[in-house]
Length: 420
Image (cartoon, rainbow, N blue to C red; front, side):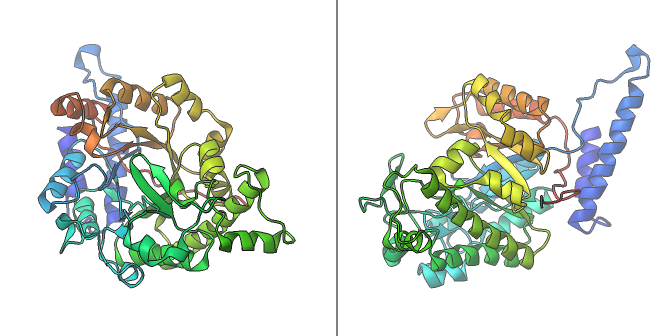
């Protein structure tokens, strides 16, 4: 009954005519119910009703991708999937908008640079899935934060790679291909101004044209540390180091630091461009733990967080070993970020050929909650219950127990101030 009442409040349209009003009203309702719950504890034991405890706010997210997943490729399937997420009390979705060298929304920027305005997959033709997701998601009270999944990465055989060969970077031996599973990838050079402008233009295009709540990057906005030896980057390094060439050791501290700092400078410009376009658009990053992210992908999210150019951190901790998982939650840089901005934890729900048992997911969620993180997000939608060794209904029931009642998406911007 209480759950139905809260959902009625979220969906009631007549006077809650703005998203901000609906969020505020929902928060007020939940706060009121928590007072009622407390009062009920003073009743005689046989008169008590045991209600599940729900945080006043908690990020409950899931990533939607077009890799090993069909959720985006059919309008009704997408709508039903968002409906089910709402019914199971998720409140945040991260739909991929930049994958496989294409945009997943009609893009004038992509049309000009790549030669195609949209991913050519048949299920996307004639559709604007980002608009669909925003419209249906907001109708269901979901927070919508598009995700630039591929970052500077592209398939080796993509139109982008073929049409812009000078934009690609390489190893010291001149090779460019980086294996990702069975796939051949190449990487755009994040130090070239024209590459930076292209990526920034894609981002601003989305922020300007869609009613999104935020935008998310991950450490694909870095660069594998083995790369960066293309002629342009080497010349730039020499120019700033008295004609000294970069070390052949890709893990040389100075060479790592120089490239990571260049990427940080680009992130500053992206942050500024986003805020100039839509000041309340949340800037979120979902990276790997700092040591991996910095040393091997040159994405120094710890510095980004200290500089105040990200407002939300969703740390990907995809670990089966519970001790390792917990240890990643305890690192100093994670605790420091928690004292500054909301920090949530990305949990692996499974992969195409790797089923994660529900018991592991439940335990990891509890460990995150025990440490007062802002919430959790799951990678990825299809493995929540459609791609698992366990029965779909059993997993959906388990998620219902994890999120027994609705709760508000955290107000990630309230009271937040960047470090000086």
